[in-house]
Amino acid sequence: MKRNLQATAIGVGIFVLFIAIWQAAASAGWLSDIAPTPARTWERAVEILSDPFYRDGPASVGIFWHMLASLLRVLVGFLIAMVIAIPLGFWLGSSPLFHKAVDPFAQILRPVSPLAWLPLGLALLRDAENTAVFVIVLSALWPTLLYTIESVRGIHPTYKNLAATLGTNWWQRLVFITAPAALPGIVTGMRQSLSTSWLVIVAAEMLVGGQGVGFFVWNMWNQLDIDAIVVAIVLIGLIGLILDYLVASLQKVVRYD
Image 1 (cartoon, rainbow, N blue to C red):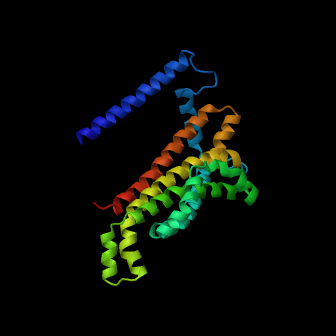
Image 2: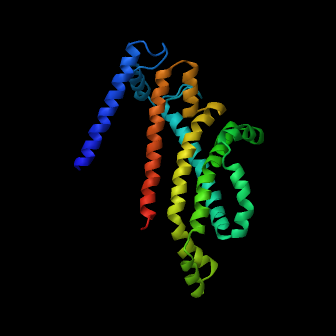
Image 3: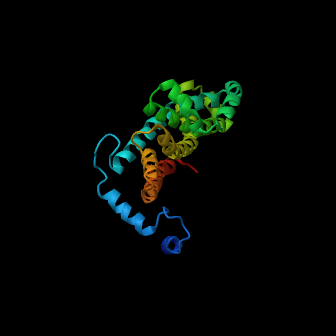
């Protein structure tokens, strides 16, 4: 308890010091004229958050609707990626032959930035909304797929030999041995996939337009409203923290020692 209080006090102190240095740099003229300041950012945050639900046209909406649009895109893309990655990971992890055959393709495609797929997505789908989801799918696919493959391959041979000795069929081995043993690794991959998806959606929405937090940031930049961008950055970080905490809670449930 004492250590937690000390950590909290240190964290608050660091935050106050950061704000003081930021304000001092702005007051001394060390920053550009359009650079945000703590006072203006606070005022803009109060203004934005005081009416987050307003609607005044398709693109002129409150910050809540931008955040909701981004979250829906991320969740849809994430779920599609999980439906693909987890079964494929079980299959490739269980088959050394197919894993060896497919691994070169995975190693080539995995390092490609998800944003590099945006033009291809627009060309294939001809729809900005679907393209954003398409990019999220590709962002979320690889971490979970690779973690699932390695988790299945890493199951101790003793468990497999024991199952074979007991005469279990393929489905029983999957349900009672492979899936429980691989689950902690799969959830770790899901945690990384969700974090990556939330990271990528901001940049994707800057390019595809429409509602979304990325579009909000880009629109504020076009208006040189840098204080609003700082507010959006803080909100993006908070939502990312909440998403990570939710998956981390699931990770604690499935973890075994």
